[in-house]
Image (tube, rainbow, N blue to C red):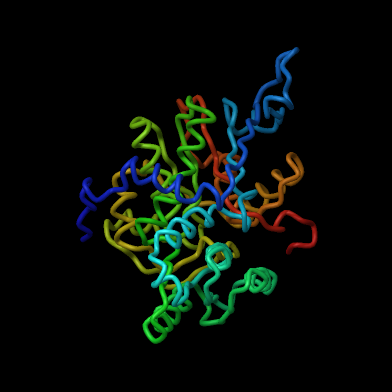
Length: 342
């Protein structure tokens, strides 16, 4: 059974603040948009205040919903925060030998961007399920793409072997304190923009985003509620938290490939055991519906994983009773809302 991560080893507020300073010139402060479940009062300058009226929310939520549009981050997802924090912390000699990573897509884009930013060779291992379009985007950032296996775990094993053989630095997508600290800068921005936020709804793949967001939010506001969201077909954290040890899934059955590792890491699980209130599971259809909602109502294009948190809200699976000011993280850009997507 997992030994909980000691509180002394959890990321501190100072870690998140240092990460924010380190990545400030290489990442964007993404916008927040408030969706009102009720009618906007007369005289309120809705557009100027970043407020949009969406009565459809009233069937799923009794309060307004804040969205953090991290799909507008450089490279299209929150992953740029963690990857840049990890890479910019490297000493120059280590960095010059190059970078390697394994990714379902978004982290690979972020590491390719980081490698380009410091002008070092970068190799990204992708599983076979990652789309050719995403692979092409990674190559446009100057990285070499190598296909390995069917799921992220296969690509991860191949990337680790490559790193050992070539003496390059492996940038883990979630099980790294500097990556987690970079992702947690999201909470700093959200609570500065909306200090009354009392719940975060966040997608979970390997758990780096959830660990960073939850730990940073708790450091700033101890009573905040944090709800994780996973696909029904890849309940990695859900099963591991229930077992109180890292569980490896036998199979993955979701098209949300960036939320689909077979296993998390003890580091992330140790943090989330102490900081996460709940994990809920959403279907691919619910994520696709949420992606379409975001496209139709806000003109924001997101992939299935990017819509997972909103899917949990719209499907009423996220336990938000008693919450007055929830925030859902829209974490990855894509085209899963477009009519041609199956």
